[in-house]
Length: 238
Image (cartoon, rainbow, N blue to C red; front, side):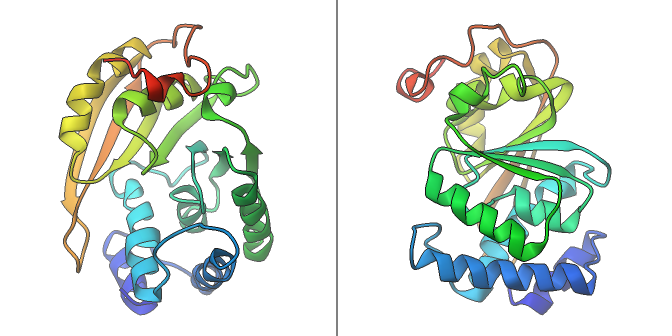
């Protein structure tokens, strides 16, 4: 998917990029490739692949949930800024908070935000487990999202404590989504969530399967969650 095909594909979903946004994606790609030589951000560096498997893939979340309004979004384990920075470029009114456990990636994101001239973005070097316990952030976000971070049973414990009541947790998954969701139902319920929808589709051109799982936050998360750093992954709730 070259940049022109990317612009055209988004247009089909009602997202029309202006010149500034197009340039932002171009700068994003160049900055990603440049920094990837210094720190490991992605295995995907071909322009067509980045536009399809990173940029377009990230934006698919907005095909199934309306992001065309002022929303506070928290992205857990965003790495190189996926999915929240492509979403922020398309929907500039979003207020984005990214949490990542690696300082080098936070350094990249700060540099990227400057290059893209982004406002209302904040980056935190922290473990998701600790961030979810922080009263400043706990249960304050309209949307919490994660892409390619962990299994649903683990992700639910990391993400749902940050979602405010009546907000949503959006998990972006590949072919194992339904299986993961079955294994994660107990964790979702325990964290105060309820699965609202699973949207499964194929990424254009390469036709690999993707799923967007939307979980509504119905009740407050019990105070003991998330458990201490490392434990959700080591002993997932089943």
